[in-house]
Image (cartoon, rainbow, N blue to C red; front, side, top):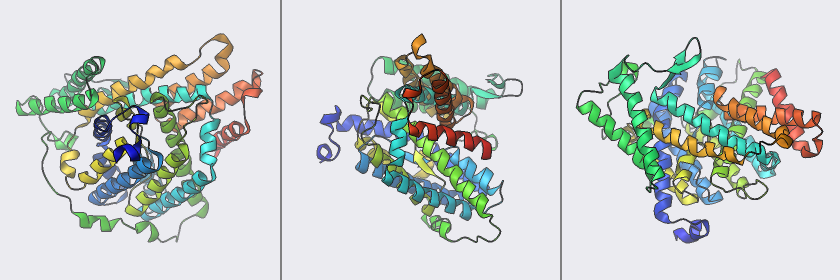
Length: 454
C-alpha cells in the first residue's frame, strides 16, 4: 500500500528511511509547540487552545502535502508570521486577535486562488536557477543561525548586534546548555560523516540525554523564571475543550473601528511574507534534495502550494497564525526523506502530540540546535553549484546578496527580495536583458513598492 501510494522505489527510498526522516523532521520542529502558544498568548489567546490549533493545523497541512504532492515537507505555524500576528497586528495596531485570524483566513483563500490559477507556480519557475541555489545556501546559514540562537551560544550585543555567550556567567543554565549544543553538534557531525542511519535524530536524542544526565547530577539547574525548564519528560494529557476558545473565532468579529485600508495592508503583508517564505523554503529544500529538474523547476510545485494554502485557511479557522512549509523539513531530507511518507509520519506525530503535549514540548532547544546547525551546513554545501566566474558576476552578485540578506535580516523572503531586485537591476545595466522575463520585472517592482509602502 505504501509503495503504491508514495512510489518509494521510484524515489530510491524505503519505508524505514522515510519514517526515520519524518520523525527527524518532527523532532526539529517540535519547538513550535512551545513557542507558538507563548507568542500568541501575548495577543490574549489561550495557550492550550493555540497548542491544539497548531497541532491540528500542522496535521492537516502536512497530510495534504503528503497525499497531494508526495513531497517530504512538513507544515506548521510559521515563525516570524506569528510574531507579526501578535506584536504588530494585535499589540501594535490594536486589532483583536479575532480580526487578525480573519486576515490570515482571507490570505489563505487568496493563496488558494493564486495556486489554482498557476500564478504562484509561474513565480517559482521565473526565479533564475542561480538564485534558486543561492536560496538554498542562504537558508542553510539562516537555520544554522537560528540553531545558534536557540542554544544560547549566540546572544545580543549592544556594540556588535550579536556576540558569543560568556560560559562562566549563569553556568548552571545558559553555560551548560551552550556547551551541550557544542557537544551535540560534534556528535551529530561524527555520526553523519560515518554514515550512521538516522544520525541527526540520534544526535537530538543524545544531546537531550546528556542534558538529563546533567540535571540529575546537579550540573544543570532548572530555572523556569528565566526560561530553563525541567528536562525530564512528564506524562500528561491536554484539555481538548480549550480548542473551543479559538475554533471558528475568525468568523466572530466586530469590524467597528477597523480601517479598511489598514486591514488590506495587513492581509497583503501576511500574503507577501508567506508567499516568499514558502517559495524560498520549497526552492531551498528541493534544491538540496535534488528534486528540481534540469530547468530548476519542481514538478510537484502546484499541489505543494495548494497544500500550503489549505493549511493556512484551516489554521485560521482552528485558531493559529499562518501555517506554512517549514524550513526544518530539510532535516528529514538530510537523512533520506524523499516522499510523502516522510510528511505523513511527521503529520501523525503532530496529531499524537495533542495527547501527550508535555512530552513532546519537553525537547529542549539546545537539543535540536545541533540538528539545525548540521543541516545548515548540508544546505550551505550548495554554494558549490554557484558559478562565480567573471562572465557570470551579473547573476553571482545577486546570489551573494540573497544569501547574506537571509540571516542578517532574519527573513527568507527578504533574501529573495534583495536577490530579485539586484538581479533585475544588474542584468538591465550590464547588457543582460535577455536573461530577464516579464515576471521578474513585475516581482522586482512589487518588492520595491513593498519597501516604499509597507
